[in-house]
Image 1 (spheres, rainbow, N blue to C red):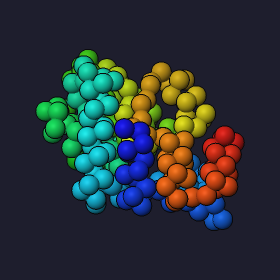
Image 2 (cartoon, rainbow, N blue to C red):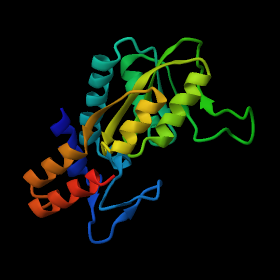
Image 3 (cartoon, one colour):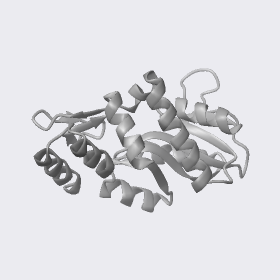
Image 4 (cartoon, one colour):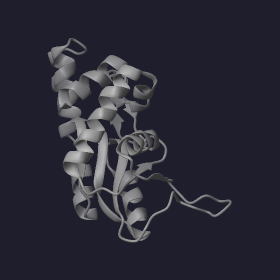
Length: 202
């Protein structure tokens, strides 16, 4: 499934390699690779692969899940699709509370002790996802963990999740995407070495 998901991301054009002109992530990190998983939603074939994989991963990893909450905005459609398929409640967590109406940060009903899984599209440093998990925890949820499509597997994110006391599981990851990209001719062996060197430096 890891390789199948990686190929779906590559075939959709969701992974951009640009070592000569690095992208700037929201965290400020300059990266030779950028992953835009939102593009998966516009490809029914890739979307089917990804959503079926996410559902399988939730069932395997968190069989006791009682609700799915997406991170705003990229995690919302995946929580909605998986929640519908699994007949589970869903909601989402904003990056900050609204400045109008009920000033909600969490949209959707959270019950005390409810076993919740956070849905994210990708994890780089993990900061925003951890904040969403903390918000749900503070609202009374029992946060089982995080499920995402893709992770860069940075030591920063692993350390941040460990410190926050949350775990995460991804459908595919940086190494698998890079290996698949090299095997299928998206990148060269030299590119592969450079990309892994970048990841290991963080």
